[in-house]
Amino acid sequence: MQNLRSKIRDIPDFPRPGILFKDITPLVKDPAVLRLSIHLLMQPFLGRDITAVAGMEARGLIFGSLVAWELGLPFVPLRKPGKLPYDVQSVSYDLEYGSAALEVHIDAVDETDRVLLIDDLLATGGTAKASCELIEKLGAEVVACAFVIELDFLGGRDRLGGYEVHSLLHY
Image (cartoon, rainbow, N blue to C red; front, side, top):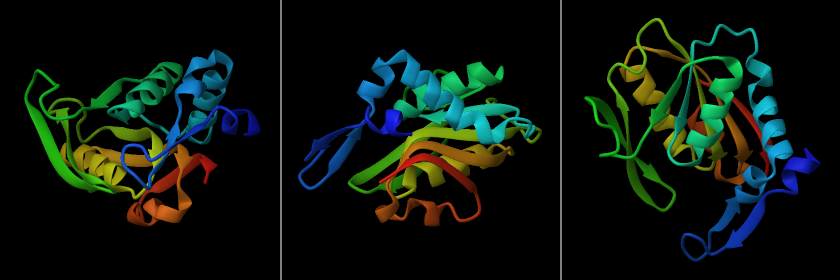
């Protein structure tokens, strides 16, 4: 894990004063460490009858699509409003520094799907909770949520009380 931790860069006061942003850009720049992170993210879910992987915009699209590719499963992009060309289901939610919304194609998953949700960071849990709600609106089951980084002091795991949570790095 030290190899992963060494590839996370702290950016103070981004996106606003008082926020210490955890930048994963150095991690995705290093192919060996990126590959390690993908394998560690998916490891607990091997053999768990997962049928799809979903990832949230923006950085969850990176990690989620790579996990889906490694597992040989469909990838479901959860996007910001106006980015998907087909009929969508949407959900709005609050962030630690504002509000946002996510959308998914209405045929991305159905009641037969068991979805692994992937993102780079679990902070307050708003995005992850909204993503779970969005997947469940389409009738699918969220099996678990996996993150590269978890900011423990923000309590995001508590907002995901009913879901299994797996995080690689804790701050």
